[in-house]
Amino acid sequence: MKITKHANLRMRQRGINPGIVDYAEYFLPSAYENQSNKILLSKKTAREEVRKIRKFADLLEKHAGTELLIDPSGSDLITVYRR
Image (cartoon, rainbow, N blue to C red; front, top):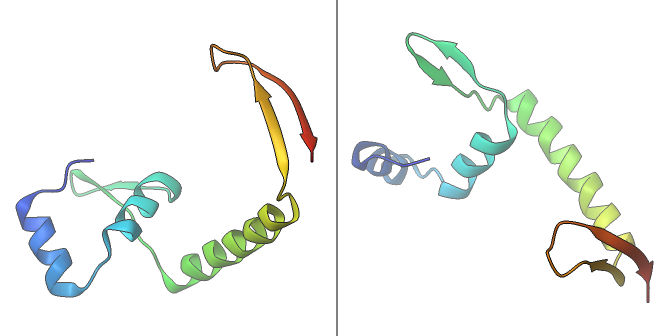
C-alpha cells in the first residue's frame, strides 16, 4: 500500500508506527464504509492479536533448529527435519 504525504504526516504527528499500519493491512479485516475501506484496531482486537502472536512466538521457539529442504525452483518442500 502506498502511504500518502498526508497520511505520513498524520502518522508522525500521532506517533503511529508504520509497522502497525503494515500489520493491520495484512492481518486485520477491513470493512467498506463511506466509499473507502476501514480497518479498526480496537483494544479487544489488539489483545486477541497479542495472544495469537505470543502463542506463535512460543511455537517458533519450540521449533528452533528445524531445517526445511526446498527444491531448486523454490516451489516444492521436499522434507523437514530437526538437527
